[in-house]
Length: 77
Image (cartoon, rainbow, N blue to C red):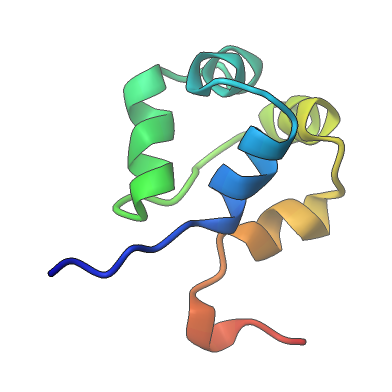
């Protein structure tokens, strides 16, 4: 049985009522790219401007966004 894993980024997005398309539009990427981020198979590779737009949409700091993508074993309390 596959282990159910909810990425912090997915939780943040859903808590704000945003779709993958909303994220893709703000970041200037495809919805498939967002799906790969959320699946944990790819890490975002974004410009500063894209990060700023994404943080504004997600109402979070750059640091918070970065923490959303840290591997579990590297997270700090």
